[in-house]
Amino acid sequence: MQEYKIKEDEENIRIDKVIGNIEKDLSRTAIQRMIEEGSILVNKKQVKVSYKVAEGDSITIYEKKPEEIDLKPQNIPLNIIYEDDDILIINKEKGMVVHPGAGNPDRTLVNAVMAKCKESLSGIGGKIRPGVVHRIDKDTSGLVIIAKNDKAHINISNQIKNREVKKTYLALVRGNIKENEAVINMPIGRSTKDRKKMAVDKNGKEAITEFKVLKRYDGFTYIEVNIKTGRTHQIRVHMAEIGHPIVGDEVYSNGKNPFGIHGQMLHAYKLKFVHPTTKKEVEFEAPLPEYFKDILDKLLFV
View 1 (cartoon, rainbow, N blue to C red):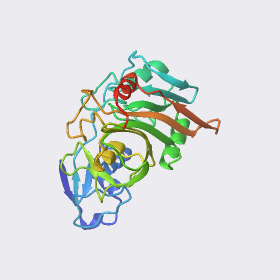
View 2: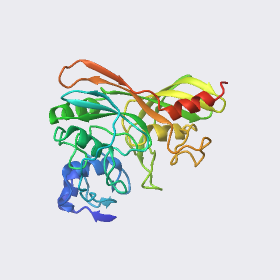
View 3: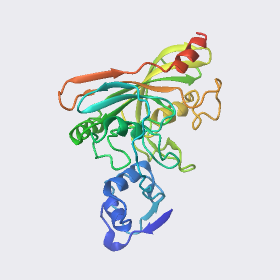
View 4: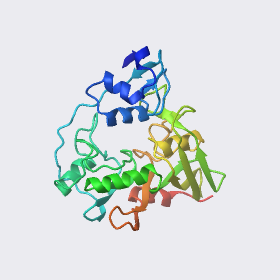
């Protein structure tokens, strides 16, 4: 952790530019990502990338750019839903990390994709994220979009930014939700108590989650979820906040795991967006994992 006090001659300058002058080894993209993730705080609070600093502001930098990893292709089986010259749609299994990071140097989705696509991947995501347009958590299963060229990457990234990509999830949560459908609109930011967790925070970024009940079981509810924003751990944080944490969630479920499974019962089952080249709307679905279906089959209706 580093702390830095803003001087008079730095006043009214964007926070990302100020950090770039302090941390010469960090790219502007990396800095902006750290600000959005809450790894860079101003006066102990999360701010927007566009925030302009004032004299006396206290800047706290919690993380530095991770060391570059020697990323190598690895022949790991992939469940490919769709592929063309621009995109690759993969049904990621639970337990697989999307890209290398601390504690996960290899055996990731990116390692597998590199072996599959060879040199045909966009480079916008950087050395450790080739082709990665968006990601889902390690223990969340389901659909991930991989861009095979920069044009596709930019196009789909813009669609995500403009909230034009519809992402639909299926989840099993604890307890019986009374409403048939609802919208959760609660800002999310990095937890001030545990930097590895996210939390509902009035100073966080806008986060909107819509859900509807598909089935009610004895002590559980099966729901379909659409997210309007893409905050880290968004669905997991929101469902836990309203008292219905996702079954198996080892971070936000208070350790309760009635089925002894590893990881949350959350599946990214549908994606809808406009194809970057054909300009036609496309939709992809990934069936529920077998373990998920088996647990649903064992539950009793209410």
